[in-house]
Image (cartoon, rainbow, N blue to C red):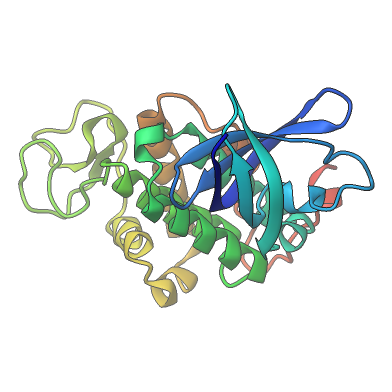
Length: 255
């Protein structure tokens, strides 16, 4: 059986038998991989902790009949511990890996891999608001999958914007003539924030008013879930904390 190595982000795991786990990974060169990690639930396992969600590892595997088999794992990015101690970071990271797992195999490109690694690294370091990192990730991952929202022109007729209406099912902002009755409106400042999130303009993002951040987050969540054709369950547990509020721990978030 051929053996191969790849760098991978651990997306999720679930138990198999008494000591094994099935690990779902987004890899740099081989797209999404599902593999069996034998014996990793035993305390004596040498690399079990390296195959937990949010971790980045250099993994050696060999091809199995239905699932590949993990032979070795070396840590490249131990982001899990720093993410898990903070509620906002944890829920944002959970939404990111869930989104990556929902993407079709054909969309699991090297760009998708680096985007996810960069997002998890930024979350673990607390470089920006966890929700803003998630929002930027969702917009960019949709763009990489061919679903970039129209932000500067009407998604239906191409009329130059900015436009005050936004329809997830229509592909982004739409002009008054194309907007269906009852379609949601988005303030110009929130639309500008969407552009900043897409471009990674962090000085603008970090200084944005709470109202614009909330409007942008709601718009992005609706857009991403529409194109993924089902809800992102982790988004149900995410809230944007009030300005100046200290980050919650996992214990506090569970109350």
